Amino acid sequence: MLKVIATEKAPAAVGPYSQAIQAGNFIYVSGQLPLIPGKGELVKDDIKAATRQALENAKAILEAAGYSFNDVVKTTVLLNDIKQFAEMNSVYAEYFTEHKPARAAFEVANLPLLADVEIEMIAYKE
Image 1 (cartoon, rainbow, N blue to C red):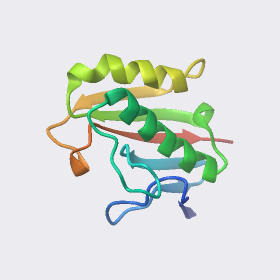
Image 2 (spheres, rainbow, N blue to C red):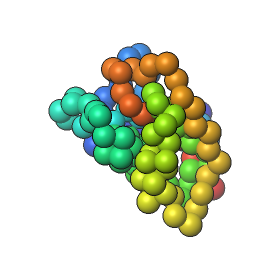
Image 3 (tube, rainbow, N blue to C red):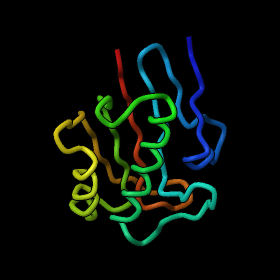
Image 4 (tube, rainbow, N blue to C red):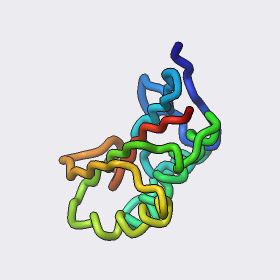
């Protein structure tokens, strides 16, 4: 059974998709841009602040489903400039301290709204 996960503590989807979908014990969190919830403002030109906002958005969605970062099994990080990887990674490491999920990170040509970073997650909980 599939369940749509939605919260006002994270930005509304900017297209025809859900913030997250629960499928059994898995939660699939859509890519989170560094949008400030309720304002729709994009955190831009500061990769550390943008990464923090994207992670906070994902955290709010996970919490709305009763999950946490400790349940995350895989993340994907999309960057508009791979040279910002180290700065993004330093913030990412603040959120994943002891528990470190599998991860992929890529540079892409463009992200929606010309964001600097987008982060998606898959979480699992028994």
